[in-house]
Image (cartoon, rainbow, N blue to C red; front, top):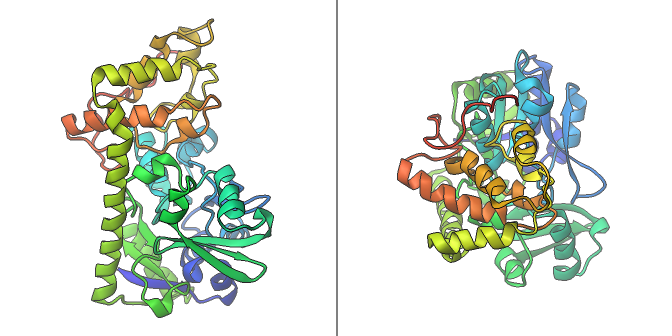
Length: 386
């Protein structure tokens, strides 16, 4: 566990928490450790997060800074557009759900994990773009386009507008019916230690907040990158004190405890098998069979073929369409929320699916997206003809 910061003043200024991740990504690209970098770049404004792939170290700086309003999942991009990172190496910045999705894709042979250098970011949750605009306009009374920076720190949402700093408690915002996505509130993977480096601002001592990143080194590959970058003068480092490490752990435990409360609230109406089936029937009755839930799910293969050929015709589709998809995901739902986020009919797919998967994971002793063993129930071979 160490503090890390960029030595380049420009990178430090543009990057988050001292620009450590940006500096390391640039160094990895410049030294040929990776062939390309995949991250999220700000689009029209801070609510518009767009995936961006580059082999130009200068463009890495353009991806610096937090974007809590972008609700992208990067996991399936490797298989759909980058041939599963086979034959070339990619450095990528990932949230917990991105990382879990990569693990599930790797188990299904859709991505080569060995060719990915992963920077995991501590994440307390993301916010849908439309909701981000509402928070800025309704909670802060500001015009969204005027906000130049946003971040979440110590349970408070911070914005910078016209050079002025404003912040509000997250719980106050969410108490007003605004705030993080539903699946983020119940997520329990806040520090993505399955990446090569787990990075964030939790545990940074007060005088270094905004100036340094707290980094947990989790693999030999991550350790070697830090060593080389330090020897080259690309980064500076310091050791965190014991109280800061303990404070980081308390912060993580607190958020996980709140996530557990959210799970109990979300899953309570689905506890009985009849209640769960009734919810499935009622909620999926408005499905228009757009296949978005299939296309974005990291626990499914990168194809909609079996669903298009097995269930042609009627809209809404029969119940078997949804039950088949649920069965294919079974115990492998990682609670990324994409199937719910992108559903044009606002079907609570993630809530239903993760309630099912949580029960199965408990029965089978398997944690989707968090361990290398394969699931006991979910579909693990690409369907014939897909």
